[in-house]
Length: 411
Ligand code: ARG
Image (cartoon, rainbow, N blue to C red):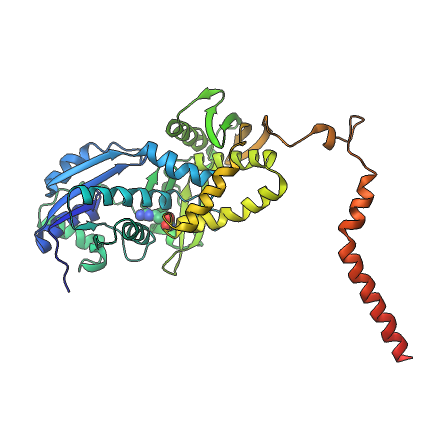
């Protein structure tokens, strides 16, 4: 049955899909359309979108800068958890979706709209992330995904539709890639990347130079953390958004943060995508390193198990789930003493930790050293090893006894 829509809030990017959607909604539903666009650090000026959306037929457009909220409420918890999907993807796109969905819901409630509309395809993860979040926050709101419903099958169909209906488009040179960018990184798919055997073409990369073209001299940087929050670069205090932007620039110049991945999407397919995330890569490495210095072994190892689970929950669109929230509060309690400095060396695509220190460091030189300052009690190692290995020894003794009984029976 066809949905009834009186007033819709549309997640609007200004691209081809969402521009066409505005007209299509008007034509098929005769509804009011409010466009909503957020700045999560795409790195482009969003102001021109206002005129563009109005020219495309929206009744109203709202543009919001959410970079700070994104950085503190989404990126930071992910960083503190060292969240990662399939060991590689640092989740830039996935992290922005629950925030955008949350804002779409509040706008819809404020504007008394009955429907939220998005331009995601039926094959991707983003539709799931948006819709699961919307349903969790406001189960009564209707959701419409035109790309899953309309007849248009290709970009060419959409361009023809736009031309027919005089929808303003900037038809630039056709970009073969689908690109989604924010503060935490850029996700790139389609074009030649669809062949997992083909090396990503140079023009696919958006924010990093090729490692072989990076400067021949390494760059050393120091990052300070305060209770799990990165606060300074080279001794200079920076708010989180600026700090991330700065690391994207520095890391990008040195070819840091390129990832090439065949990943398992939620909808069951494998897809080849590439990512660039200089700041995310540098910060995750530095943060983990400080944890290695400060957290005790058991806590560290246990927390490590959760990085991958937490990453999965983000990837799966389950930001607002009880499990994600419970892990987040656990992670929060582990961050109190993650204060200190990490020194890194950026060189031709490689980011290495070369130094770390913290007032909460559990590294004791007198315990670790092999010099005469050593205070480690070597003789207690003997008793320790005896008891540590006792279960194995007990088992070996039993097996030996059984062998004796067996050989006696044979005789
Ligand atoms: N595969 C990544 C994810 O699911 C990136 C998706 C990129 N989205 C896009 N519209 N290009 O998080």
